[in-house]
Image 1 (cartoon, rainbow, N blue to C red):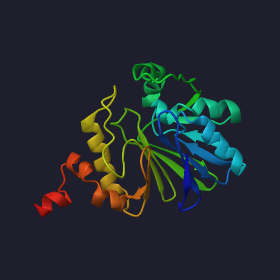
Image 2: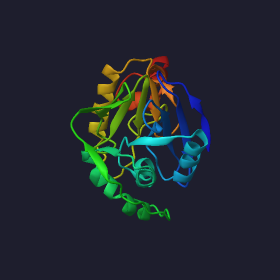
Image 3: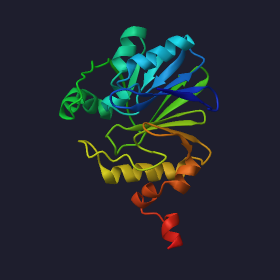
Image 4: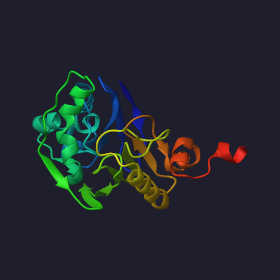
Length: 230
């Protein structure tokens, strides 16, 4: 399943979702050889690749917000086919390596190949895509190496930030207090007009999320609209 093009500040962003364990992958056209990069290719490789072929694109990079199989499981496929680097925070290498164990545990009849990862580290890392910076911003909590990836007006949030609800998974490596601290850091520093593209569900401006995601507000111990009305 493919949704329509979404407007970003500099380039088109195409959402591809579906597969045996649906998650959001993004094709981002960019002024680089091949014409695009991928964010979070999960285990829906055939549909993502079909969309690339239809648009005459070849990914120059695969960027992963974190190491869970539904966000990085397709990385090796695209690396092997197109020769592109795969970038992931070093703190999530263990998460990535546990993908096949997790797939077995939740009884999904699928196994993934491990890509050759270019590990990033620290609180912030910037990659230049053409003349536009792409910033990995470490936001641990959902996993130890979770990041949000900023590109122009777009923020690819993985499972750190959703339009509705919270990315709590009860999986190994999750830390609720660390996730809360990471989101509060975003709360204080991201402008309301930035578009948040999550790993699951629909996109929204950060202002819409701040005002309307009541489950998140409760998680952050902030007043909600319903509480104020009561």
